[in-house]
Amino acid sequence: MHLEIVGQVSQIETIAVGGRIRDIMRLRKQFGQGRWRKLKGIAVVRLESGRMRKAEVHWYEAHGIGKRKLKIKRLLD
Image (cartoon, rainbow, N blue to C red; front, top):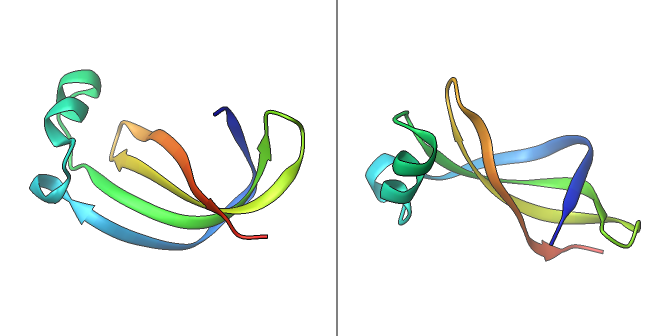
């Protein structure tokens, strides 16, 4: 599902860091070494259909690499 974040992500929380991330080996192989964190937050997103919805989003992030593998976990409205 393609999505675009409109505005800023709020209520950001860390879910897991480093070895606690299930996909850590895939992340390191695909994007490189880094201090990987899995995060979640609330954001307004634009879906493929053009509709804008409030959603809980999850993503992986590492310093110097940035946000990767952004996905919607659930729609909130």
